[in-house]
Length: 77
Image 1 (cartoon, rainbow, N blue to C red):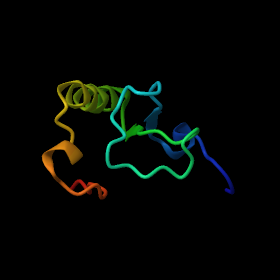
Image 2 (tube, one colour):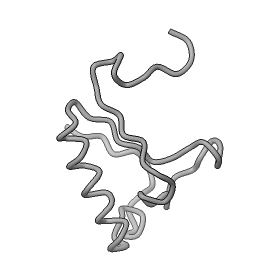
Image 3 (cartoon, rainbow, N blue to C red):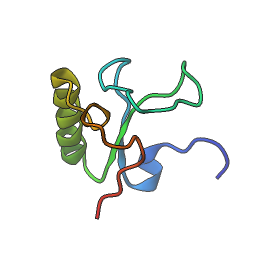
Image 4 (tube, helix red, strand yellow):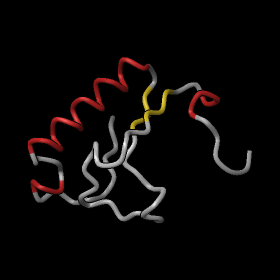
């Protein structure tokens, strides 16, 4: 399938937050107007949990980049 495909067609849940909800520190956007930090998960509950943690880390100022970690991708086991 060419182009963008909704998360639901792939059996996952995608959450696109409002601008500024998650920190973009360490993210290199392809397009400043369209890119954002998003969450993809297997269930809505899992997506909500991850989004809550990301939001709390953003508020507390303790995101990965703030700790001096590389801005590269995180690969979960």
